[in-house]
Length: 197
Image (cartoon, rainbow, N blue to C red):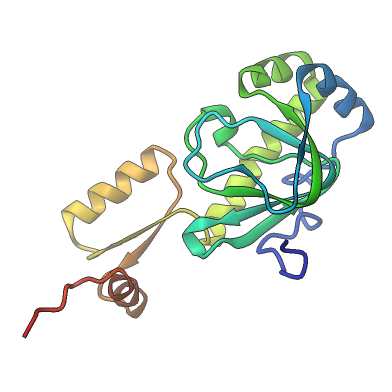
């Protein structure tokens, strides 16, 4: 799968965002989830899915891909790590895709039981809450994830769209349509349409 590709985020560089769960944490999760096996390259969840479950890697790995940027590898979760960011709790549609890297076994904890995890396992609850918030912060500050919004900087409609996305915690990157990057994105999307001669 993506073993030779460098991820955008190094999970070893930030233990808060990407903790490895302890044996006690994993034991506490076992009765709340079920073991699921995935083949190499099999999609675990896709961008746009809502109410996704938490996936804890037991063996193999999960590659988290950015569909808004040509499926670039964002991060790879290895044994003892779990997938998900703030969307785990908000139950909003996710903005990334997860794919098994090699034969992968995970503990799948249903989304409906995540509140139970947070209430019954305080040590794990703290790790999870800090991790999912830090992951979203890292991704937003990196400017690599989310929707691409292109429009004039002084346009009321562009400002309204940006404010709506911001207030609803939807990750996005804004490109002024007067900049080279904004013009390139618009050209890539076929705008403005070329007139027939």
